[in-house]
Length: 388
Ligand SMILES: Cc1ncc(COP(=O)(O)O)c(C=O)c1O
Image 1: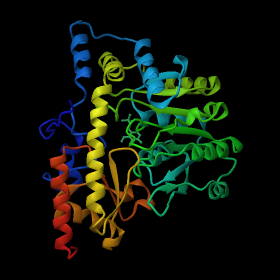
Image 2: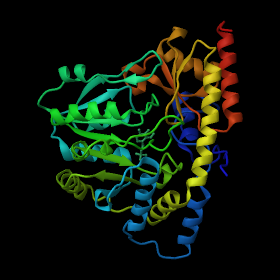
Image 3: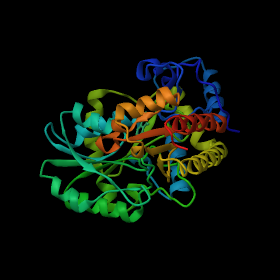
Image 4: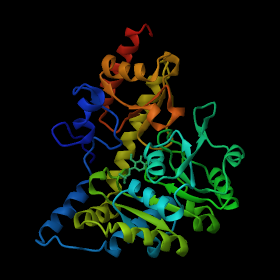
């Protein structure tokens, strides 16, 4: 059974930072991408069992944990990973930074397809590489698309990597096999390594299927580094555990050489058992979760269809990307509108890149009651502005 949990009295970032970010500690926080839904019981049972052993020393991530992930991917994504391709990472974002340092030099260029999860930009910048900014464009249904012809005009012999968010945060796109093939071929032709962040890969709605980039072809697999984990699927971000999947021996050796400098090790014992339990025993919980997110997503579709705010229908993720440009507000005004007139703390579209100007991102991984209350607030705020 999925359970909704009041996180206000816990140390949840989305609550504790409200005053600082929104200037109002009472806003309903629908920003940080984690859920107000309890992590599966099987994860706690596994951690409790481990607690019975009273030494918490150094431990390697066990093969059984990797095998549990391999089985999950076989079953859910028709993709067979080999154990030796996988390694532990405490965080996808940390892995992105590590990959940038492993596969490029200071001053090299990295393609970022925008709008996108903000750390993509930050990791390139703080590692002293240059962002090649590729604007995704929306089709008539609001779905983002890339354009390899245009991309070709902006790259140079210093362009070493492309950061791909698959499925896409914030637009909720599930890239098709044809799109991934086209993008992959573009990268092969131009000697560009693909960094495929697939952390949202399990949160895909009916009629869509996540295609792992490394499953497209052997050549593409060999030029791709993929990041995966339990953080989003099972609401386990606080366990600080994810994995890196590298098929190419050469790329893996380079990545491992960089890891040695950081010494981030093999993770914590409680994370190992939580991770393994989630992939081994979390299926029923996961199915219920997807049922709930599907209902909430439909609620949003029904609501926004009759407002001036247009929502891109997410094919994946629990994030709704709201096109608020028809309200005619500047970005600061738009944020204030949601905070002061609707009482909601959303993620500002502009933080996802300049294409996000006029957009807001709403996290709908909450109870139906909480979502309904948020939508009523938006409805009243719009009425206050003369929209009926
Ligand atoms: C696309 C994407 N990648 C990575 C992360 C964060 O991953 P981690 O907490 O493992 O660094 C998020 C969190 O929102 C995300 O949306």
